[in-house]
Image 1 (cartoon, one colour):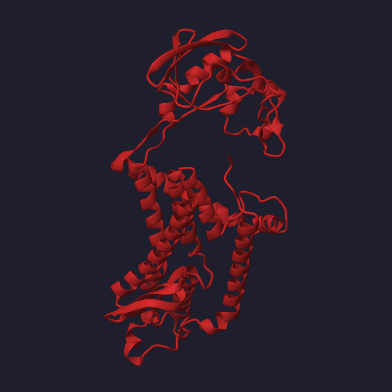
Image 2: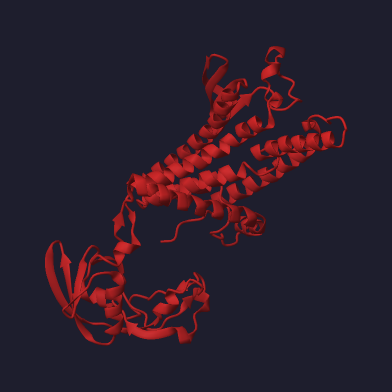
Length: 425
């Protein structure tokens, strides 16, 4: 039930963001005096509508987006009433048309930044700094411990132990539970994950006394910490190293307890959240541009996923795929990540719509500035203004772009249906 709720909420979030995109176009067009005749959510047959002044608002049967009709977007529009000719969009200065056409993307960017601000301001998020200053709360307990470190070739991660085949972990022997707070080892008070980890690693092969608190009651137990091969801490903390780079020289034998911590949470508050949201916005813009650059090289991987191959988790996803992931996140109670995904999707849609290709908004902006630059050049050369670009001559190119976009969308959609990306356990 929670999964279905997450899918529905994420889909509604996308629909709202697309509707606000069109509202951005409508609002700026009206601000400059352009005539807006229609604003609808959805496509297909009209379910409900009403008219206020000169604009018809309504809802259509297929909730797959939204649209707004601005009179005279191009000089070739043949449905402009002679009485509205002065308010046709193409007659307005290029800077005003640019604002109107980019307002949709700006709305996505503003919405994404607002989501991030609300997330940082009011939602408790993991605070790694507190992990080093507060007592260690037990998160998960490993049932066993693998003495020899190795990489699983299938997952490209550290190989996990096999219960029954590998010896039980010290945490399992102690009977530790999620939420227990480890307070001391061998009588030495511990605060912070790194402090506790260093004490455990140094005590490998020895019997130690572990003090912990459960449900407000202090407890104490004795256990022998097993020795196991692990990656040296200086290698773990080196951002330039990857798991594929690990060599035997990077390993050492250390004590292992067999737990992961619960990372403490905190909220930044409304003021501090502004800076954090700005930083995250910059990071998401960078990631979005990088993702768009890599789309062509990911098409073969998408095709492989459709034809029976393993799905690359870094391949593009459709709205269906994003909604599925939103459902999984809600099912796990990971609402902060749910909101981050929704914000990231808004940034992606905003950047995508600014690409200088018809029929997206960026194509109209590019043509408007091409017309302006060409007029200035012809004036400098003393030649007559060549006038507006004939959109009808660009229709073959526009149709080609539409077909490419449609094919790519269909490919991602099919991949998300028959071989979807799922979150790791």
